[in-house]
Amino acid sequence: MCETATLDPITEFGANAYTEEEERSLSEIIDSFNERHGTSFSRDDFLRFERVTREIMDEDMTEMVRNNPADVVYNAFSQAFFQGMVKMFQNDNEMRNIVMTDKDAREQATRHFFKRAQRAAREG
Image (cartoon, rainbow, N blue to C red; front, side, top):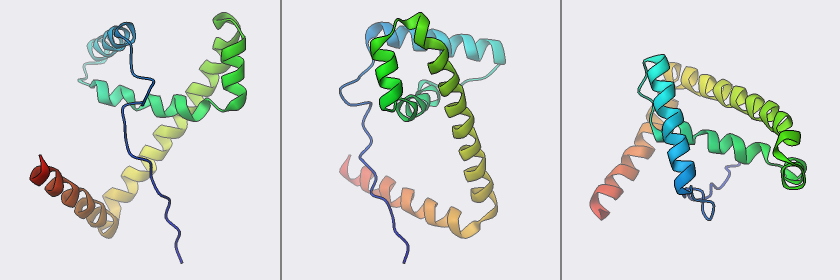
């Protein structure tokens, strides 16, 4: 029997919403990135990195960040964040490959999100 995990509802980072300064900083990062690379990535594309931050902020990292000056803990955070990004990109690549080659998996996901879109359209 296959176990399935229950997913938490998606919220925009709960009580840790972006401040005005953080929004401005993120917007500048996105604009600079898109200008330098000729891309058109959005805020949502970059907010995926929030998941990386949540994953690396285990008890040890949280204590390090809480109890040390930024210049002392930044390198440890930076290394963990980079490793987390690499892992996320590898997972993205794996999922992309499966979706592109497994018609049944692609159809199952498409049907799921279609039903959600139908419900949202009817309720909205």
